[in-house]
Image (cartoon, rainbow, N blue to C red; front, top):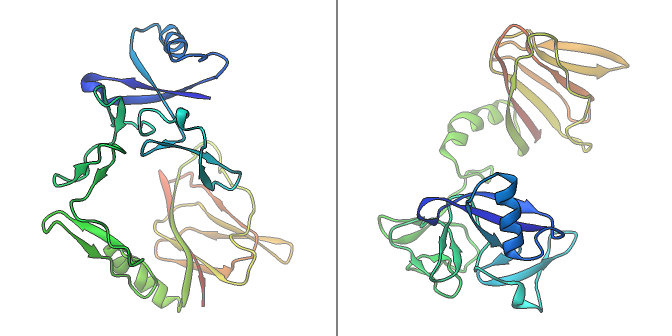
Length: 253
């Protein structure tokens, strides 16, 4: 497949479209097809999906990349993205500048910090005020996020969770004409726990298959449902509120 970037004012990429190679036998053929398709006279530039930092890569079925021996397929430096700029002089797609102090590498057309990233294997964030790399500090659960510390950690401690597997928030919109249900499933097949914290009152909830029977637990604000992660269960949507809000925890205890 061939990929094309539509350029707007100041050569800013507005959208990316995909065209069959059978149609886009040349760049101009792809451009003509898109303008005929949309009855327009827009500016399109072909972009290479597997090009990064001026090099073209091959990917195997596992997503591992190797450098393509045929580097003639590398063009325009980087695969375009919405918000990128097409630089006509460099014939390159360039991402938005992340920080005022960063400098464009003319070879790769990638923005680089004025100070090299440390190579000690630890995680760092760029500090624009000091123009230095600040080491990222993690909490005991291996997470760096003040909101996680403020809202999630107290719940994990209440659950006596020693090692979280996954924490995710779900928002399910209402279905006023019928009570929608997802398919029965298990979160994980290995022995850990699932906890569902209900954040609002509604007539939605959770159905669990226990001893060949289906048990329903209604969504009630600040109620938490705990069960073995390999238990078959499914969520049911609300018909009396706009949304059903939950936080789902999978953890070892």
